[in-house]
Length: 196
Image 1 (cartoon, rainbow, N blue to C red):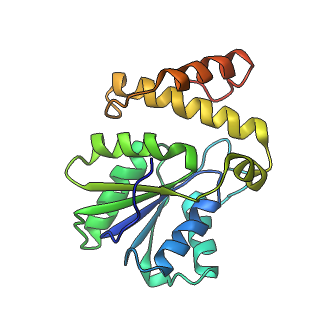
Image 2: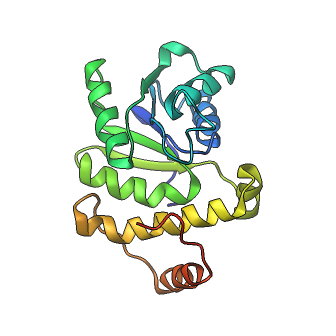
Image 3: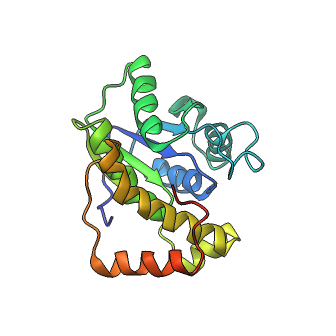
């Protein structure tokens, strides 16, 4: 989304198949952007084999190997979607005495807009900044190792940006015509395994 990185009260690393989320979260913690980091996420069909103990647990372990102290990390292991990532993390933070006014959502690169739109719906009073590992598309695909999965996930994510506001899960986001056209071409080309 092009948000400028700046200090915030807390960060939430949104669980997924992408361990780069935890890597970038550790980097941003090390840069002093936030004192508390929540990793949120259970499992999904795309993560169960890779992260058998759950996304959040594996993210925590990875971040600790990169220097984030255990005392700075909270683990929310139940979320099964982005709305739950935000709402369950918010509840966990409150349980631990944190009532943040600003939050940094750290996600996969193509998920920033959906994460933002979801947070604005689920937690409208918090100021939201979004970030992801700053990788070019080809570098991101190489980091994941599965081009079809990445494009399928990207296409599915854009569909959710469009459809979730109609279902009350997110606030509406403008989708430029060229992006909508690219989406249609990718669906036509068979990148549809992550569609609703």
